Image 1 (cartoon, protein in one colour):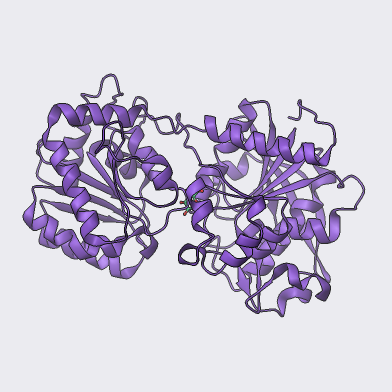
Image 2: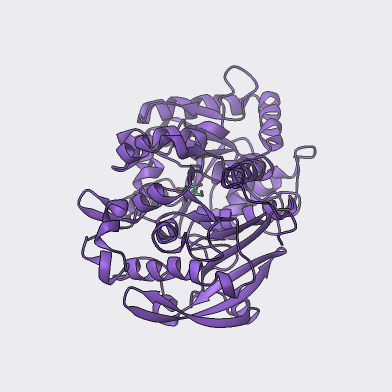
Length: 484
Ligand code: GLC
């Protein structure tokens, strides 16, 4: 079976969020299970030089973008045994930022069209093209409108995964012809709320739609979560399914992680304390093993639940013996808030603005509790990493947080959870966790249970394979298992 995974970012080449982690690890997990999976992404100017120089040039083609034709260089790279195709056009992709340009619609229309155009040139005709988020949502649209009956393309099936429904790729209707190269008759596939909506097009045209957790798959049918797309999703519910993401257990491993001061495991957790003290020291917090240290590693944006934190943090800092290590950047409001708290309570709260991967790992390893009170969280990977490093998650029951973290109140759970989006519910839950921390023996058991949770790609890869097989069976053509 051959799967082409089309995506706008993938580690180690380029990353702006969790999507890149998924695209950098799910294909390896599929490949280990004998599924031929290759990845295609844009060749960005900002990729690390050593990676760029390791790429092999294959050929170049010209890709139609409405009435224009644009150069498309095809480069090939390898990461952990998986082939990655990087599609080059410097006019579109040699820019400082990967997203946020006035012509993003055209850039990703070009890329989506190119994904289909390169197929005869890469010696890999996929059974399934798996697209991700609005940037590749036009692949199923172009496939349906222009390629489905082209020779050699007839049996391809498309899957579209929503990693975050908040970002849909919404543009004026005028782009339909001159930018996307589509006919007026195709407009209903993409039109939504009097705009062109890329994500809506992906939902309409893909054979199957997935999202990154079973709970989020239900939530996005509700207007509170759907950012306007609930009615179209309810109509298409029959093809929607949630598959929880995984994390790489080799990349995230406290026994081997080079960023840590000392290594440890669920069986030998003693050295976690070394990481805690070193972290406290390096962040200027008072160095004490007995005080519970709460970690936050996040983009500082509203949907991550920071208005709850803002509402009660000072109450917690002034009434409880507790410390915080916060790492992140985002909205000015939250950056200012955490900076102010760090200035006011320097021994109790440290705030590092930005994103530093090494410090992130040190916070996972050095903290006792990991806070993620998200308003919505399609999947969330940080809570899975926190579990692996023995930092017990405190989360709101939403999306992938609900599917991966279960309250330990009735025994057997791996964290602490609260349901309603309410600051004092969060505070009460944090206090339950802080009380739990005081019972050293009980906490040790909980920590071990957290570390033993298996959120590797195993289950997720198997579910993806099941989905691909179902699609191919529906299509009724033979499967070539040695597809890579
Ligand atoms: C997006 C979502 C996040 C998810 C990630 C990978 O970044 O916001 O919850 O874990 O995609 O699917």
